[in-house]
Length: 400
Image (cartoon, rainbow, N blue to C red; front, side, top):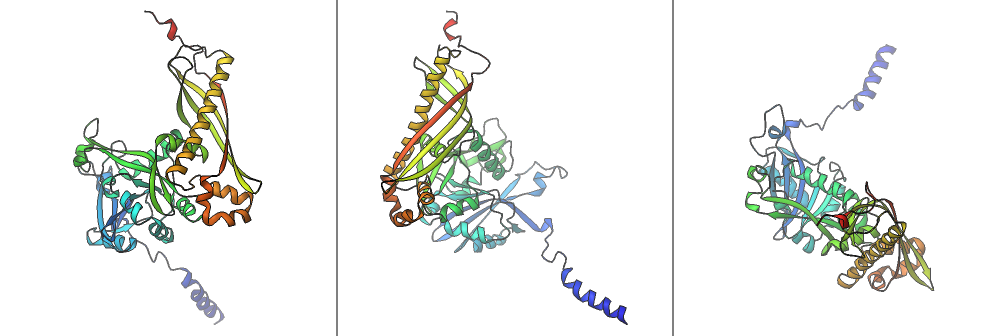
């Protein structure tokens, strides 16, 4: 009797724990969404979902005859209503756990603001916040997601991989994930900056296999410049040099290539091997002062003039010229943003808060006004460690 009672009690306790996969969905019931686009459609939110076509990406099925992805669209009053409404055209339930890129159309980002969408995705448990966020420049998100790409046959993967590589090797671009963007939106003393993407070329053939059937694609996707926001609305775009200055200040530069004019004719190209930037605020006479210190280790990539690279005097001159160039790049970026947009995208307000929280609390409501007259001091230290496999240039020794 005791054994039976213990068995019944054990079963009663264990059964609630053995629920199994109560919410499981078979793969053939799901549409795997890799790219999500958000645009305006009158007063509604238009959602574009780039979904993988399994038969076209599976080697066992002998795919390759059709396109590897398809796009479903729907419009509704809110983001998740529109996503749920995709089932009107999609034969499968849209699965959001593998989203790689979130793209906002420029018109939507300017007029409606991006906060509601970002919050909705952060709240959704099936959406992981490690996707990259981008802004479609001079076009819509749906047109960006409509472009087929060579090499990476899934466009959303191409955008993710291309931006990730560009961020590591080219200073005008940067990456922002969903959770980072939420932090920028909620943290006082800094405004969001997001990399842009545009469609270049003939868009008429962008969505079919003709776009990947030739050596040079008629239509392609290019990351282009940085978009800057005030609160959650897009207010403008940085130029390439302004984007470089921003990334140097924000310590976003891992590796890049720059050139400087020689003191004679021609240019010298530098490869940045390591770059670190430290920002620190000090309170001087009751007013904040921002100190920016940049350290750069570079190698010489190319010499297009007849200077003697093997000379230490020449190396010191190049280091000094490079330091002046980097200081000017950062200074021009800050001054341009002050003059045109009057908003702190560099996080100087955060540094002031860290230095004196009480003082920043007094300035917080009018921080953009303080930002316009903020004392910012720049310092750059450049070391050239390598000159490549050649010493002096042999340009002057070329035969006539």
